[in-house]
Image 1 (tube, rainbow, N blue to C red):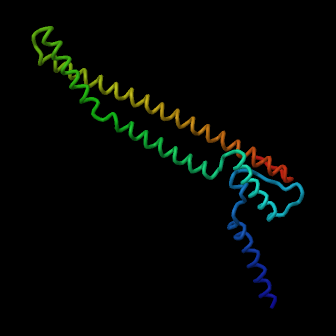
Image 2 (cartoon, rainbow, N blue to C red; image 1 turned 45 degrees about the horizontal axis):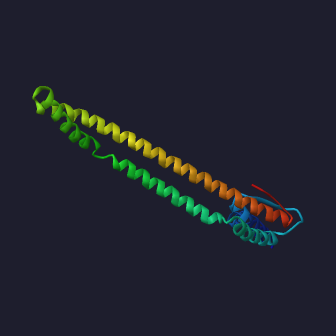
Length: 181
């Protein structure tokens, strides 16, 4: 009988960490907001108050953090696609430059020493180099623009999240909690 009771106690104690590991995080914790009940509210009351304050903060700040995360993921994906398009856009720049250079070289060669072929060859070589340089510069500028836009979007998202957390914390404090983020 003692072994049976001991087994039940040990099994119960082993189940406690598993129960805590499976317990879902509170709404505030999922938003990286630490909440402490000042008036001794129990977990059920705190959960109810957090849900009410979440709804209130969404309404008053105009920001829903879970939609904000989705929006941020979409913006990151769009920036990545734009970056890939920029990388692919420079293909063939050397060939285009070669054609332009050959035409210009042929004209200059014909005028300079009556040898359009020689001028075209020199012009084509110079055109390849110029075309590649121009494409590289355009890529770098486009990448810088994409990076700047992504940084601005990230800053705007952080500001929106800050506004939400301010509203969420104010509501919780009005309900007699301490809220820190």
